Amino acid sequence: MNLSVGIVGLPNVGKSTLFNALLKRQQAYVANFPFATIEPNVGIVDVPDWRLDKLSEVVKDSENMDHLPPKIPATVEFVDIAGLIAGASKGEGLGNRFLAHIRETSAICHVVRMFSDPDVVKQGVASPEEDFEAVETELKLADLQTLEKQKSPGNTQDKEALSFWEVVTKLKDALSRGVPVRDMVLSDKELKVANLLSLITVKPIIVCLNVDESNLRDANKIEFEYSKKFNLELSQVVAICAKIESDLASLSESDQRAYLADIGIKESGLERLIKKAFKTLGLITFLTAGEKEVRAWTIRSGTKASVAAGVIHSDFEKKFIKADVVDFEKFVEAKGWVRAREKGMVRSEGRDYVMRDGDVVEFKIGS
Image 1: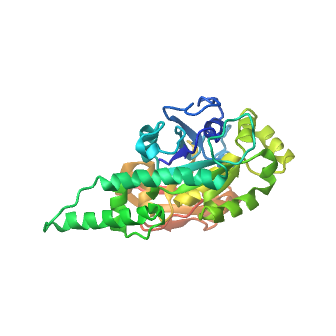
Image 2: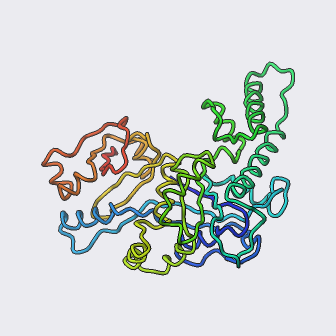
């Protein structure tokens, strides 16, 4: 499935620097003035997953191959969107284009400035909280404008039109009180209307605190503190130093690990950001392992086996027979499919089996 994350924030908070670091190359134009990014930059980023390395080794040994099978990780699409300013909902700056681009993403990564570089122009915010609220306010105002364009059905017997208007009125009332759609208690029907109208604040968000290198050792503490200030779950806040991520991008994987160890950090900002994005969006990965490739596939938590098969190929869902499933740890312990089956570790699951993160699967498909 396509996971698209829009990187947003005020000008000069480090969005494009972070984007370039994520893509490990200089793709987005970085400059020390507002609106250096006009058209959104889009890049596909591999999701770090050490399990693929293990699976690749197991398959090579179990199948007596003279080379490792290709590894295909899950991916995330990141979109670097123009900096927002106050008044964007009324078209100020690049507001209209900004809002159109963000509507197309499945989640929002809100970059907030916490670094202290006096050489980088700051856009009139005094604190991370004000930075966050400035963008949030514009997104809420944009949603209110969308709702205000909806016309009352008037005196009609059309139950569907009346029901639609009732939802619009409820959404408008809550937004006018400053409540984003994602924080409202909505039924499936009401949520469907919010998505139909392409409301921005219905999207899940992650706040990326762009901190100084010296703050990274206290990342957990900072994330906890600001999750409370922003009224978000801890899984929705991540502290990253975009400058360090930029430095890491030019290093080999082994050198990256050594660099991180030197500054007392176990995981890169990219790894932590993607983990939190997956958790915020309720995503998991299942794995396939064979001579052709070992691969991670992204699905929503709660997805049934037949639907997961359809992620690999649309025909697989219709022609699904069963799924042979083994836990990742047991698959590695058994050193492949043959011994896993001999040891009774492989379960035969039907179409209604709910997939779990780390399931290694072989789908049996009819003709």
